[in-house]
Amino acid sequence: MTDWTTNDIPDQSRRLAVVTGATGGLGLETALVLAGKGAEVVLAARNLDKGAEAERLIRERHPSAEVRFEMLNLADLGSVAAFADRQLASGRPIDLLINNAGVMALPRRQTTADGFEMQFGVNYLSHFALTGRLLPLLEAANARVVQLSSVAHRGGAIRLDDLNYQTGYRPWPVYQQSKLAMLMFAIELQRRSDAHGWGLTSVAAHPGFARTDLIANGPASPGGALFGWAVGLLEKVMSHSAADGALPILLAATSPTVTPAGYYGPQGFQEMKGPPGVAEIKPQAQDVAVAGALWTASERLTGVRFG
Ligand SMILES: NC(=O)c1ccc[n+]([C@@H]2O[C@H](COP(=O)([O-])OP(=O)(O)OC[C@H]3O[C@@H](n4cnc5c(N)ncnc54)[C@H](OP(=O)(O)O)[C@@H]3O)[C@@H](O)[C@H]2O)c1
Image (cartoon, rainbow, N blue to C red; front, side):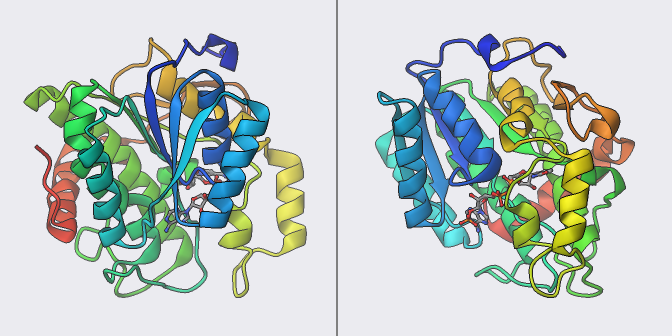
């Protein structure tokens, strides 16, 4: 699959795609391409001004694009419920859900409106709740669901006795847990879809190391462990553009040949950059018992049950 490009994306006309965090970085690049291929795209994010700018940018590139911003704050389960209720009220089946929004390695522990640790809450728990609430619309379209993971999942562990890091907060392990949780969610969702006949294709993707606002808003923000010069150096050596980072997401979202529960990322050294293809899943992401326990805990924490 290493010669895959956006030219390989089939026509997306009459398909509805919801992309979270589509007002910047990888989400915006993903939305841009999908809109260019004819999909109707909902840019689901939390900043109205950035939403208007993202809409403008996409229409500038693709004048006939069907694109609209919709408010979704993943740091608030009430906002997730309100967003899902609006979609359910419209009754329009969703063909493609890309759970992309995220924050990384926040220097100090922060919490969501519901009291969850911010990285776990925004990156994973709210996407779990969103997917569960949208399930009737996803089932109706035999949808493709894509979860954003990361090479960071490799060193991650699921802390079942303290998922929200009430004690011992450290920015990176918490991020790693959230990205491992997303990969496990993708695999477990496929398992459950198959068992219950939901008809979904559930996959995960990661962009390698792509130049976006993720570092500036996280580890390089005030109090963080990374300084601007270090980021510049790292980016120069190891990164690729946001547009290139979006390719594995787009492949996972649109290729007719993806493997259910598959994982896609760049094919270069350490999967940091390069053309998109199959990515490596570490064994802890395939632990069925932990995935089941995480699912149960996620239902309890969010109050959302699937099916
Ligand atoms: N860049 C990389 O190298 C890399 C590597 C591995 C994985 N990833 C993953 O890729 C995904 C996208 O990251 P990115 O690199 O594109 O970062 P980014 O440029 O910072 O974009 C993140 C997007 O998520 C949105 N977002 C953040 N918090 C939100 C919230 N509470 N509610 C709704 N939307 C929210 C942001 O909106 P605002 O602008 O309003 O904050 C923005 O649209 C993340 O899941 C990240 O973990 C990225």
